[in-house]
Amino acid sequence: MPVTELRVAGFGGQGVILAAMIIGKAASIFQNGYATLTQSFGPEARGSACSAQLILSDSPVLYPYLTKPDMLIAMSQDAYARFAPDLKPNGILLIEKDLVHVTSAPAGMRMFGIPATRLAEEIGRRLVLNIVMVGFFGAVTGLVEPDALRKAVADSVPPGTEALNLRAFDRGYEYGLSKHHASGHDEWTIEKGLEALHG
Amino acid sequence: MTADPKGVLTGAHFLDGDQACTEGCLAAGARFAAGYPITPSTEIVERFAQRIPTVGGVFVQMEDELAASIAIQGAVWGGAKAFTVTSGPGFSLMMEHLGYAVMTETPCVLVNVQRGGPSTGLPTLPAQSDMMQARWGSHGDYEIIALSPSSPQECFDLTIQAFNLSEEFRVPVLLMMDECVGHMTEKVVIPEAEGIEIRPRRLTTLPPDQFTLYATNGDMVPDMVHAGMGYRFHVTGLTHDDRGYPAMTAQAQDKLIRRLKGKISTAAERIAFRDEEALDDAEVVVVSYGITARVAQRAIEDARRKGLKVGKLRLITVWPFPERQVRELAGRVKAFVVPELNMGQMALEVERAAGGRARTIPVPHAGGTVHQPADILRAIEEAAK
Image: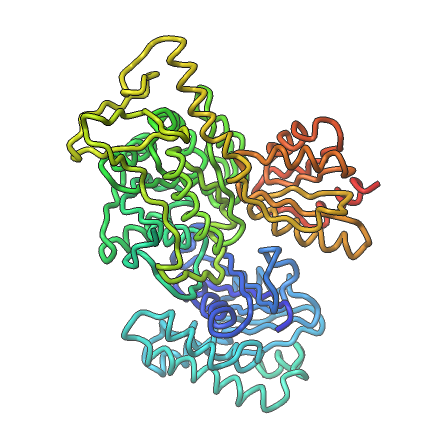
């Protein structure tokens, strides 16, 4: 995988850091890549803005922070408003589409939405929305092998919750495949995305 | 001797530098930690406290850093391998007892996950501004060993190294991390226990009636005893004779201080671990350490693409400083470029060792984040002129 800068952002309690941790672990432990994860520290334990920065690469990562993010996974309106403007041209935006109302975005940005919280509730636990998001990320970007992601999910969640979390992963992954991969996501621009999301 | 498998979490893990440091402590055989919470170091002892119920050991949250830094020394004389962790403000409070460990030759490890200072400064953001404090922070004349990791993997590896060096030389060893490395998560590979070399404590083999507490035998480092082994001994921060009793004379002071310094300085070259690249035909050498070395690496590669002859000297052992090597390089390179997350601390040391034969160009940074590679590149280009 080429050097890819990814930001995962939302509010505290959504499992933002864990989602980034799982992607990084999948890439560097369960696949032959390199991953460097840093996170913002502050009073975001519950409810406030929270963000993790992840760099994925084929070779060891030198500079530890994001410079121009290739991707943003936004799980809250605040996260979207704060970080979407930093995305590089033709960057990819993944949103929790019930929680993020996209108003504007850089030209050429590709956008994909999933009602992760709703899907998580259908599975039985709202808490697993971050894992739904990880599955969606896997399907839409194809950046990390789904097998590696599944292994990282099972390895990272509390013991006894593996099955639930893997269901959440699969749900997000399937949603990503059906809605987007099938329709050729490279064509998916902000204009089409806005239209799809808001009619 | 190799590591006790009970403390070794063999495998590939996705850990941050703080957690990797904990695993290094456990693999090295540390079973006692005392600390007072302070960002960005707290996670090290937090994980230690979580791990010891299965590994065995004690964590004490003390009332402050003074207490933490002396509790570990009690534990060492009681037979444990011990460490404490802190950051800037706490490091300042530990300086008195750092000197006590130097004077009493108590092997222990102090981890400083550096953040921006002075005072409480920037609790959650990186700096490398305690490097001179590491060398000179406690009063009196002494030598110290300090290591600087630039990745979570090195936080694991160098923590073990820190314990081994502290046991070999009976000196406190400082692990000078920084917030960025401490809070950065990457792959960390922990080998099998039998692949981890552990330096055991230098315990005497002499019976009590033939044992003298600070008598040395050949290598300037005395053997030790623990409380409860049946020996009567006296440990003091006062200047002492070979028996460990106070000796308030210029002669005793001269003998002791020369040995305390000499045991480190005579071994300086052997323990000056470095990571070097292309020094043979270099015109400019970038000297860096810790997280800054990674950012510098990017600048070095950019400079090479522009055709500049740039060498790399990454200090893994920061103290003792690799003086002889810098002096030699100074005779054949144009300049040293020294980026660091402070306003120029190790740059002073490079300049001193270079002795005016090559320029030293500091790339200072007040901390809070890391350098932009472009800033280091600009300094390299300036140096190459």
